[in-house]
Length: 459
Ligand code: URP
Ligand code: ZN
Ligand code: ZN
Image (cartoon, rainbow, N blue to C red; front, top):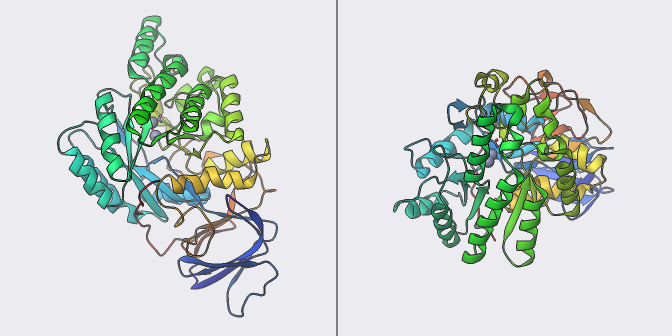
């Protein structure tokens, strides 16, 4: 329901730096003001009663792949399906990747993706992606920055698909420095992985059951070290996507303490799922890169998230379905990798870190909303409840728990890696740009199309 004005009263407002009882007043698409909970609501303003609920800035998911074609497979969702699922899960801003198809220029991939953002029910930001360096790339990156995109994905793995060589990584990082931009790096050492995969072939274990052993923690740490050296030498910022090992997170923390602007993202699956799934009936459904790690590693990553060493949590949402996952069962090098998760990101983190392990809700807001907004140049438009910010708000009843079933979710797939888990942290009401899009299980379409967000220069 779209209102020109709205008041959310009776709840506990949570930002990343404070929380407390307050009323939130919305005018049009934006937050107009916050007021003491005791202040009366002027007559005529529609009211949402948030008693007993937390009122949070909508989630900002810094890592979603929407309609991604990588290798032979394309994920099942477009902007409409992905953002609808995001909103059901309490996320009101997604950040997608413009990964160029073979022969496509990064600039053209960006233009095509930005146009698609209007199909969404919430706003979307974008990362560009560079695979190969040539003389045209600096000018393309300037034009991409002029379009409001300042983050660029680089893969150190997936040879012959999207892998960038080390010189490309350095050249892109250097060019981005002039543009207030930042590299977003998937860091896994490709030659170590290919070596381990060759050994797996020789053992006859190149299927999903052997996935974890053919993409080692050492491969991740090795690549993180190399990219950190480049960042240090250039004085450039760098963001590591989907870190899955304590040693890699520690490298980033150490570099940061020495003045390198380096940031760690991890994902719900590296905090809540482990490599025992590769010994199960359908290991393909859990194939992602980096792979799920041992229970001991998972608990070490959780400890670092609780200690404040993780800056953001991204879903790394990849909406493949079971048919796709099962097509190339015999070879993990060919089967599609990645897990669906844009809808379950907030509930998994709320349950695992806030409810089970006592993470403060302010910190939950930091890693799932405020920091992703900052590190994408869209703060304070997103990621905070403050006057002038977009009125993207979610209401969570912390006592409400639901058991995950893929049939109840809204992602364009037929499975969830969290099937059967009881989770809290579901948004009962979701307001997107001042419009109540989800209320007590009823989804009302957003009359305002999603926007392609413009990123400001990064610090
Ligand atoms: O397994 C994953 N993460 N697939 C998606 C592409 C990527 O590496 O982010
Ligand atoms: Zn990746
Ligand atoms: Zn990814």
